Amino acid sequence: MAKMTVIYKTPKDKEFFEQHYFDVHIPLAKQLPGLIKYEINDGTIISLTGHSEPYRIANLYFDSLEAMMNAFRSEIGQKCAVDRKILASNEDVQIYLYDTMDT
Image 1: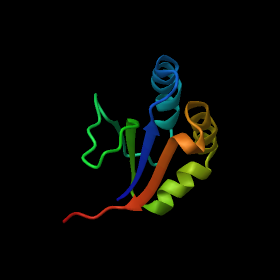
Image 2: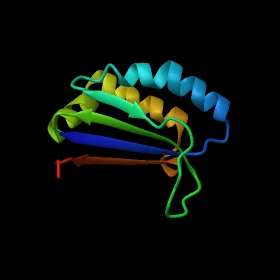
Image 3: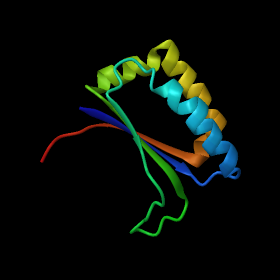
Image 4: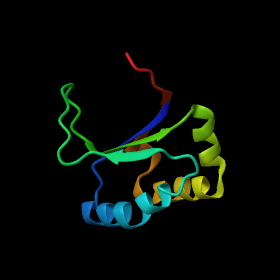
């Protein structure tokens, strides 16, 4: 399985972020071809390493990195990429793509 983790820093306008994220971005992202699961944090994020800016964390799951890359090359994927920039600049978000394994 492959996973995308998106970590948004605390936005300047939390009300706008929340409204746009829940009303526009999530419904758009849920249309990604091959998306298995989309989850976000519920409530406060506690950092044990002193990071104070994480505001929202999202995890998106796909069968493979190839499936994920194909999803983001699709028309919906391109729309998601453009829409994400409405929510946060590249300096205000971290995005990680990786394979997972059970241990």
